Amino acid sequence: MVSVVGLVLFGAVLAVHTLFAAVLTRFFRLRLNTHWGYVIYSFTITPVVLFVTTLVFFGVFPIGAGLNLGATALLGAAVGLPLALGFTIDTLYVPPPEEIDLPQRQ
Image 1 (cartoon, helix red, strand yellow):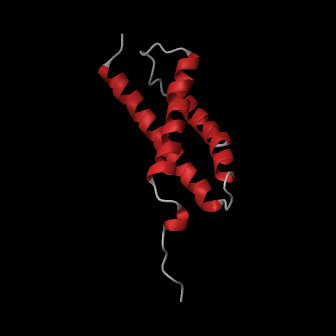
Image 2: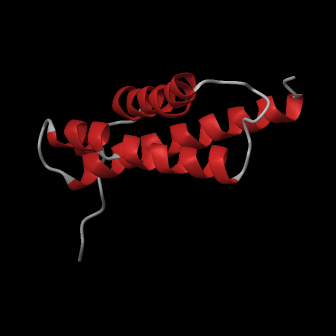
Image 3: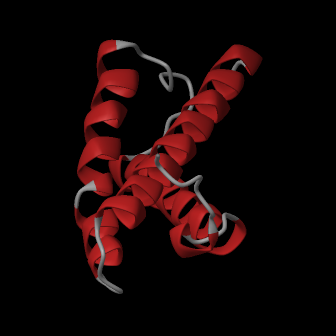
């Protein structure tokens, strides 16, 4: 049976994964000076990071033990959904690095 604590912890893991995805996307946008480079890196490296943290959260710490999710549903919910949300948040709602004015060095 699903407990309230299990659902809250699962939601917290999804929030942390979304934060990871948004920060990694932003990092790639700042470091790569190409139009499509950050997209390629975001969709190849970020899922690996989210997969490793999924293994830690749901393997070492049995957070989703009572949820009875299959492997495909777990990976879709813990990797796919946060990847899409984090990428969308950074790409659509955060201003591009070119639009941010930095103070001049002296």
